[in-house]
Length: 287
Ligand SMILES: C[C@](O)(CO)[C@H](O)COP(=O)(O)OP(=O)(O)OC[C@H]1O[C@@H](n2ccc(N)nc2=O)[C@H](O)[C@@H]1O
Ligand SMILES: Nc1ncnc2c1ncn2[C@@H]1O[C@H](COP(=O)(O)OP(=O)(O)OP(=O)(O)O)[C@@H](O)[C@H]1O
Image (cartoon, rainbow, N blue to C red):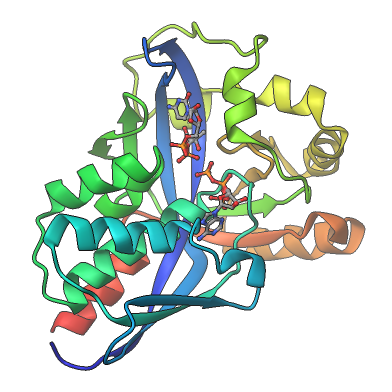
């Protein structure tokens, strides 16, 4: 193994729509969704060291514990390969937490992909996908690294190339609990199965949206703030919502307007991409 000191992105995702079509016997919900990857996210810095296993630092010290998905990913990889991995990982946290844009899941996937490559572990994609799925339903799409149509509990993925559109994202500064929302008795769980895949990016809905808007007044307030600029939609279980923008210039103008009127929603813009920036960075390292 060559010594390394590299920074690899961990991009965000949006669920362009999210239909819940049923529930498995183990309680997990069956979904149909499109995961849209964004060219925006956290960055993980990996540095080799001589001993001491895996260590993690982050400016947000509450994220340094063993329950961080980065540590869980590193442990799962060590277990799967029987290799002792010595590396320090610094997390530059940009993505809002509990926002439905997959920050923790993406950090987890970037850790699996990067350590696999940097330590020459050579686990195949299929095995990384299986390890990732055990760590979270949103992890596999970041391992695959492609904007994708998803079914099952989110792990049955089919790449779905799409035009690179711009999005504006608002974060109502409200942490929502994915576990609690999936348990809510008022959640719609019987949306009919759909076969018109790509069209659902525009015509589909998010089954969590009415629930989240009714439970969290700040989310409802953010929807109302976004409405003059387009048709806001919830991503995942929220709390983030997004608007599809016509082009980059419009995205920048709307960002300026919303940031002035509603700085409390920490708006940002990002370009949707078909391939993950994490995969691009790792490929560049390998060549
Ligand atoms: C809402 C989405 O973000 C849409 O992409 C995902 O379905 C959630 O993915 P995630 O945050 O990675 O979720 P996990 O950490 O795997 O699961 C958290 C909890 O949510 C519930 N859960 C999750 C995914 C799923 N398809 N059905 C569920 O019922 C389960 O109770 C689970 O214990
Ligand atoms: N690396 C990580 N970054 C952020 N949160 C993490 C991380 N590892 C574990 N967590 C835990 O996961 C919780 C959810 O954070 P995350 O950013 O993944 O939410 P999310 O965007 O709603 O995820 P998803 O869209 O996958 O449901 C956090 O409150 C935190 O306790």
